[in-house]
Length: 62
Image (cartoon, rainbow, N blue to C red; front, side):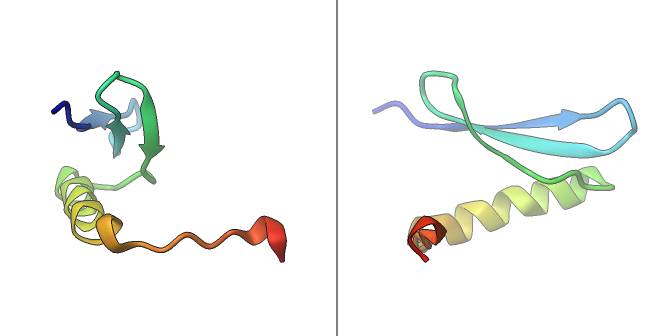
């Protein structure tokens, strides 16, 4: 079974962000900018921990 990939990137301004890519290589989520690489890695771990049980809030119906 193919899985997604977190891709960690450094920006030209020295900050870091990550993309979550589907198994077909398409970006399905992009993070905020983090001041440090450690911060971005912590963000990845947070997504791994919390996304599986996240609910969907559809604000288009409010």
